[in-house]
Amino acid sequence: MKFMLKVVAFMLLGTTLAFAKPTIYILATGGTIAGSGSGELSTAYTSGTVTVDKLIAAVPQINEIATIKGEQISQIGSQEMNNEVWLKLAKRVNELLTSGKADGVVITHGTDTMEETAYFLNLVVKSDKPIVMVGAMRNSGSLSADGPLNLFNAVNVAISKDSVNKGVMVVMNDEIHAAREVTKTNTTGVETFKSPNAGKIGTVFYGNVKFYMAPLRKHTASSEFDITKITELPRVDILYSHANDNADFANIAIKNGTKGIISAGMGNGNPFPTVLEALGEGVKKGVVVVRDSRVGSGETTLNGEVDDAKYGFLASDNLNAQKARVLLMLALTKTMDKAKIQELFLTH
Ligand code: ASP
Image (cartoon, rainbow, N blue to C red; front, side, top):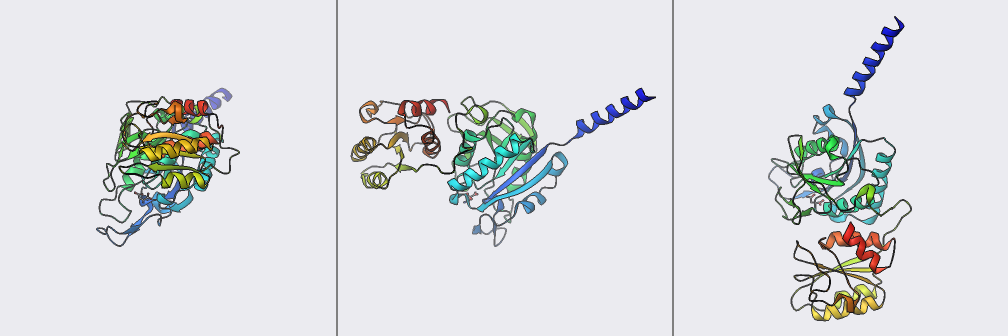
């Protein structure tokens, strides 16, 4: 009799475990997904007005597949994103995932700087559990708002076993992109997110998740960065090059104490001649200069038309300028050694 009771107890426990839903935290930061306007066809709207509870309530289907918990981290348009929110968000994601409170995290975010936040988290979160970023191009009151289905898909990616150890992902418009590769390419279209150098890593169609590729550069648990004790990040600026450019912005950034400059040069990272010389002077004053390109895809190669060895410049590999800025900021929290920083650009 005792034996039979034990068997039944084990069976009940097994069934409970089999049906235990994963716990997914939705951390909301604002953006168009939480935006509202003056009508279904109105182009004017304000980002970050709808609370996380309302975002969750708009997609009741996610409660069937996961135990959902919501937290409001910030309520801003992502053009206002800043180091303070990044550090707060990263520390909270780390805490939720490493403590075991969450099986995965979904972050709702504006699309303007989503790629930067994604890459920042990709470098500093110490967990291989799924971390999914999601947004919308149409605000919550728009005709055919894309936020609810994007959120449903994001939660499905966050609960998928296949999402483990893929680093931070961006889920929008039925596609899954890796944080290092993804960039916003269209100002208004729902198909805005692309990964120009590598392609998307998967798709998610009404919750059906499929992966085709995995990121190989160091990320999350294998990344060399740790922000546990960091409360501030160093200043790093981006300089955008163009024909008939001048060195004013380079000089002022250096004069105002920037620690690093990402030069978004022309073509294979070529700055205008006067800017090139100003950047070289910056290096002599201790500023770390990384050459990048304004082109949007492809590698910026060391010692191409620019003599990097002579000027003491580094090159960004194939990161776009806004992501190179994130990596250089984090690199400068660890070291000023240029060979080491170049290595970080080739491995992360
Ligand atoms: N400006 C908005 C933001 O990034 C745009 C969006 O979310 O699509 O917050």
